Amino acid sequence: MPDAPAPLLVVCALGIERRALAAGTGRAASAAGDAGPVDVLRTGMGPERAERAVARRLAEDPYRAAPVIAAGFCAGLLPDMRPGDVVVADAVRADGEDAGTTGCPDNGPLLDALALLDARVHTGLLLGTDHVVRGAAGRTRLRERGAVAVDMESAATLRTAAATSGARPVAAVRVVVDAPEHELVRFGTLRGGITAYRVLSSVLPAFFEWHRHVMIPRRRT
Image (cartoon, rainbow, N blue to C red):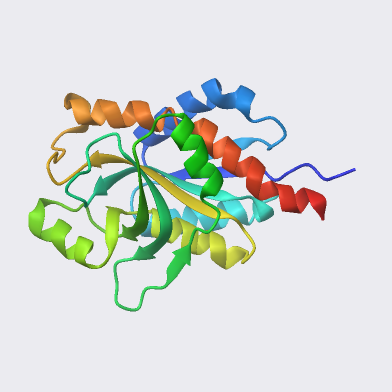
């Protein structure tokens, strides 16, 4: 009889992100099937907090083999991006000359499931910074480094997850809340922020589908 699959660990930074994801978890629970349970971990803002919180959780049973998704909001860097767009990272990297890149090779099920949700999806490099990005000059610099979007925690989250187990499936899915033509000043008062919140709360079915897919080889061994 196969072992029970490891839980899916969804990692976010902010309370508002966790609330959106928790709301979506309830609506998507029936889609989980045999993929296993999901746990949403809030780390606090910034790469250092993300690294510490993820390392602690993955050192616990039953998370030692858990797939990890970094989720939440991000700042889009492409001119055609708008709030509510979804970014599925091909890879994540911290913004530094010597920063290593963590690949996300198992995105097919995520992209297929998001297509069924009619999400407007972008793929590419998700870059990590230690500060909130504002203004055209900052966005241009990061875009010239090959990134399509930026956030503060995904690179640290997935680097830490991969370091604890090289075979661990990882992914990063972020919802654009701030874009070149739609800069966010105050989250709760702007339509873009509300749109991003609603989209983030809707993506859990795609997470469950990814979880089911990446756990199949483990169940066959």
